[in-house]
Image 1 (cartoon, rainbow, N blue to C red):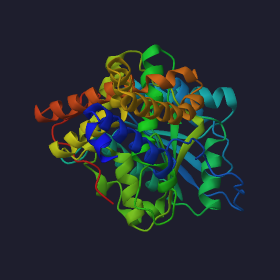
Image 2: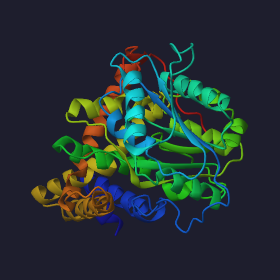
Image 3: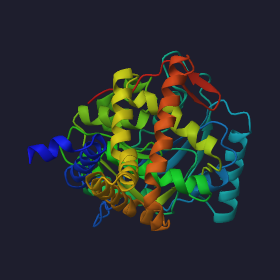
Length: 404
């Protein structure tokens, strides 16, 4: 037996390592590949609906506001609620359009949530633009009447009419301090079909939702597009000030809330959708590259380990299968094929969630290779002094989300 092991090729050993990694990922990594973590069901309505302030940071968002903001204005919420849209230095008329949409909603529907549009001015040193806008919006909302909850939602996120009601019902019924939903991202063009479902899949692999949703768990994360947060929990955690420099602000927020004793929950959304288009590969590339290296704590060692891991887990299986078949190496062939099959099987639920053809699961190694290149580009940008960039702002040395 030992003689046969010594005679095994390097390719066969790599294939076996990849196969073993997929066996563990399939069964021992929080069942990250499943898509059944949805908003808790059976949530009874509270006797008295708590008050909510919806805070929307917006910088040059005129293209998406007619869909996203209109969906917020038409929320069917029984309690007191209002919207604060923070016009963060927009040059495309975002603030004026928001006011016009509120007037149109009031005229057509006889009401709608009240809207306040404010502008915070340029961010102070040490603050990222989004968190500076959130800080200003929360301050304004609390000045208008201290709300029980804050709904932090991005300007490109559209909500079903009962979205706010369902979020609040889940938080009150299950005594949660933070409830976050990963919005269903837009999947229309070819590049979006190839890259977007994998973005959520990889996020779930990095932060398994089941682990996050356990009380006392070490894993913490949220999805910044839709976060319902108790105001009292925000006070205990000291946010947003405590995370003012975080580029990956959603993960940093969840960690801060959990460290302060809060209970958090994260799942996939059924009634919350991103309407931002990413029609070109360059658009998707910028989305990933602007924060990928920050997620690795700007560490060359972590980057090297990540590249090695992606290569062994995602790139090696099809390459080992091809090399095994071509070179007459049966161990490399069957181990590489088994790893590729396990990989594709774990991707099927996410493709089904995004209503995409399941045959696309076999292309996951191609998408993983693109993500590997995006991560390397993110590191290169950082070391060239460009760091994270978004909507005309660049953060040369952004701080990664604090550990927790």
